[in-house]
Image (cartoon, rainbow, N blue to C red; front, side):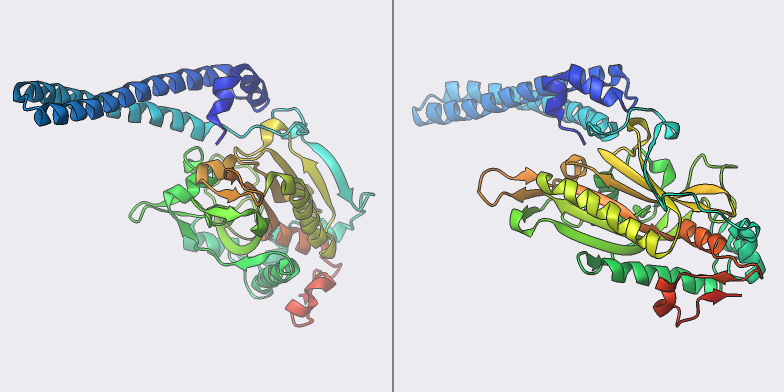
Length: 426
């Protein structure tokens, strides 16, 4: 969450910066008003606590002086103050909760270099590979859901029979391809990023730490009986690995990678890009995540972008890099680059990675700090996350791009070691 001091000290500047993200000015006014009420309530509570403490001291003095009547009078005053304190504590708690609720819904402040805009049409293409558009053959212009059915490697109908629509079922070499992609990515990142296998289900406070709750509850799968949530991304458990802990600056950056299944309801997506693997409720992904100092964050962001692009080049997939505009970023991000691959069968650019620098937004929610090596007070870490990569759409782009004239699919050489040398699906 943002620092409440920004609302207290310069609300006009906060209105301007969050206005870039579409936050109405009245939301900032409401936050400032609730914060003022909370501080006033806390002041009353603290004054009453101090009064009770002073009355206790006076009672003790009166008893030591043998003035029982005075002591009894003071005790009555203390009891009255105690009753008042209960009401004031409840009022203070309510006021603080109002402020926290507003803060939890506020997005992060965008970085200065984030493009202006309110939607995907305002995102900026930063780079592409290869630099010239590729030419695709007509036999590559077949959508992956048809290829998958023809080759027996993707069975959306049986997936729907088992779990409902938008739950894919991979078969044979299609399933093996998914496993090969995961192993290849984990090996690729293992030189610098520690491999983690986190839990797939997490507590509510774990989801709150990343910003997925409370704002995006409708997009998440909730196991009400156990009050656990199916993770939408490995970013969620990785962010909370060090929740409420203090790290040493010498241990930063902490670089983590994880493979997990990911679950998203995709609320509001009915009828929109729901064929095949374009938009699914469950998918596999390898995540990159890092805790850094503020000074390390920029280099780490560029490292994550580079690593995701390296994989796309190794997989020989045409792709581009987009800088998301202020209005199109996720709630926690201060800057986000999306990587999109071109799928010739769908004739679409498909997002396969989203790399975000979240500044201290998530760390403030999760209370993750570091101790500077030169001493002084603890500081909030910065968090960064990125897909490297999400496999459903990569799978789709690979089988469309690699389709041959005879209907078979040729896979890139980088997967040879993970597929036993068999790079053809037929």
